[in-house]
Image (cartoon, rainbow, N blue to C red; front, side, top):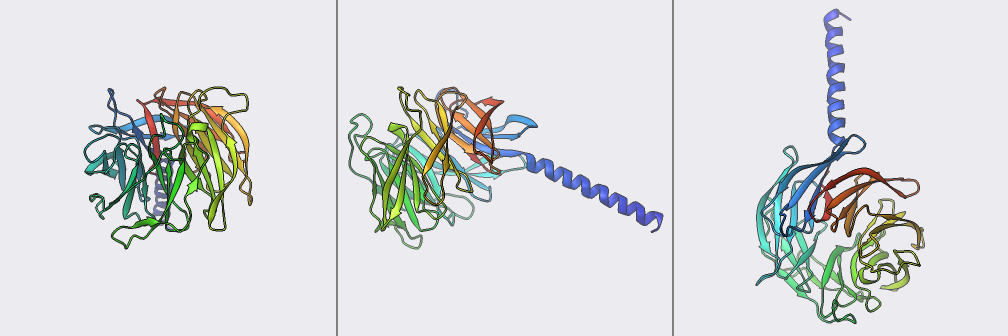
Length: 380
């Protein structure tokens, strides 16, 4: 090998090493969206980045001039984001779309459309990411909003109103849609309604002018006064886990003979807890072995459950303080090595280390103050 060839070879190795190192450092950085209640201290949608064990939370940018973006998600490619504007009006609140610039760490508004119901509080993308499903808590209804290829939203093409009430006259005087979640293996939408103690099930056909229609599967009825909020599934969708907000419980329902039957109910708090409950978020790990649920009220905890396969039954493993007040939301990092809790009442995000072998959490000293953080969603 001549000296010149050897020199080029060495330079090539150095360049490759530097490129890989830079790429590694870039992928170490985790970036997520934070939805907030704006109220007096308007912060809008935050983009927060951090490198676990290396760099603390940092607010990369804030998109203001938006009212109560309390629920914010992104498409799989991380090119578009969507946020509710939880408000009221003649045609309800609004839903806004954004383009995401990952290099500049910012989002830019594309457009907004009406949610067709008061208090939009939940968003889901259909499996092909052509439609946005919106749950309107105050309006007691849900809407379907088409999405153009450029991220622009089109006015809702279908709105479905729920009817009924339940036993708590203060909070269940009428329907309150709290989540809209697609089945993991079928074209079905599950709509948890806190106000009527029911999960309504719809078949979804994107080719139809009105894509949603009542399913042949009976609606899931929960114990009166439970207040269904958010839900998750196992891999094939035969097991459904539902937060009973008003009771601070996780309900387990199993598909039997084309019906979701109640199997068990698991309290989030320990048996001697006497305070007020406020069940909120629920997440399941990618291997479906662990479930996490947050409890607000006087508890302010995250409960860790171990899930048995194949029965689907749960075993409580840990109850740990959320590191603040009112943990309305939390999220696992994409590698599931960490969990971030969003404490609405104490205006902070708190980072927890997750033991992937045991599922248990350990609070770190890393946190950041953000005004009323209420939803978290990773974009990479």
